[in-house]
Image 1 (cartoon, one colour):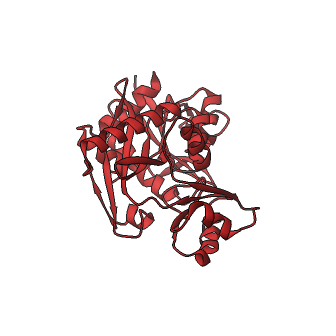
Image 2: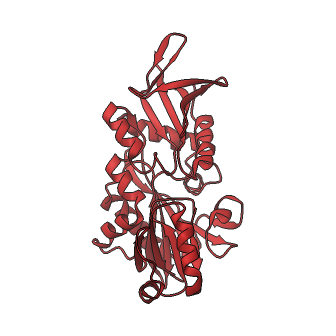
Image 3: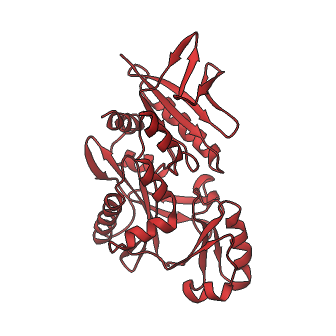
Length: 323
């Protein structure tokens, strides 16, 4: 009997449109002979299943919907929501309460890894190298000289809980720091300011595949812009080179550190970690637990290099979840 699979997409953040694209790719890649697939739009104004261009309201009491007088319940949820509420643990806690299996890590791990400051605090205790950072809340006074004294210039200003480079700025001069901070606060009431690491940026996926934890081929990121911003990520303003042009020693170090980060954080399912390699040494930036799933996205590129198709990648995630 076919399993009912909900592919949840959308969300409440600036990443909603990107999530909808990821969800569509997942929906179109999975085998309809094996699964009954349903596109579930989770948006601020509505939770609906879209089937044959008709919207069916989701019953939030049990995450089911009614069609032709039949209640449809889901055997598993494929989480394709970047940002709030799919990547910050909120939705995952809801599914856990309902006993619905899903393709993501447990809710605590999702909440932890969505918070850049807290993630860095955990991994640093295990010897993972990171950039020097300065945390701020929106209620804090902005004292630019104190910030610069700690992180130096140039520096990066980032929302603490956001993705896709929304609200991120690279700051070269102290007089531009306040504007960058205010921009970041538009995405989140918490921000993190990090020192600039002058090195080679790489991204690496770590996933559970066929009951084994594997590290995918590493991608080197060469942005045409000043850094790997939204335009570089989604509008073709970067080169994404897989496998990365790094030495064997650097490759082994990044693979070892990425796998270690995954295990330290007690992850499950998908992950994609970002590093800067400085003088042969990788520095961890952040981990993404609901990475982009379009054919152009980094993790699918890495899977392809490892001879894993999109269909195999997504099917494996469901099978791992159902176990």
